[in-house]
Amino acid sequence: MLFKFKSSILNNQIGSKIYMGLTEHNQELRERLFQLIIFLVFLVGLCFSQTKILAQLLQGVIEGIKFFQPSPDEYFFLSFKLSLSTALVVESPIVILYAICYLFPALLSREKFAFGSLFLLSFVLFFAGSLYAYKVVAPAALKFFFSYTKDILEPLWSFQDYVDFLWTLFLGSIYSFQIPVIQILLGFIGFCTSKNCFNWLRYVFLIATILAAIITPSTDPITQVVFTIAIIILYLTGSSFLFALEKIGILS
Image (tube, rainbow, N blue to C red; front, side):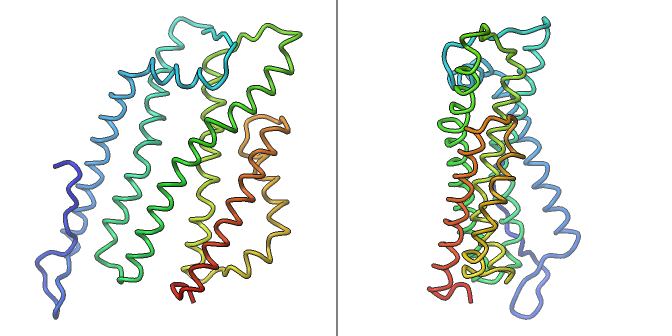
């Protein structure tokens, strides 16, 4: 079975526990990497066969725009690029899950609970970030540019540039939504506490503005404000999670 998680505890027994030898450990790592590569190839093929649906989903972000291709082969190579990008994004949670399963036998019970909870939170935030980009960030940015030029220029956009623009927004949103996960990880290693996070809030407003300007592909104020608000809310959410974990004793 492709996604069968084999145990990292094998036959070399020390005391009451059974540990994996270095050779078996490396063998398991190679097997996991091979499975991920095979699954990536499968996803790329699946996405490539459904390129039309992917393209229609991206075009559905905004209405009233006509697209063109400046060369005969542009859409073909764009289809492969779009398929590969989509496959990598879809597989990224599985890569994290494989990494956690690979490390699980070496973790304590408390650490297993922490990493399992963080993966679940990261998984939820991953899709929340994707949905936020598709429903909020991208429409706001595109409508700003469309309304700014509609009375002067005919809205005829290169589909290649349009896809690159959207993917930058999607990736920026997905990474931004991982802020609470990063905060909790830093809390587990003792780098910060909820009190520190709330005390740093005044600096977060400035950093969020700068970060929003960096991760957005455009300079329009609408997109940057939307990203800035999201980053601040996510930071406050992560700080609240840290506070709750400290109160129930998971974090000291």
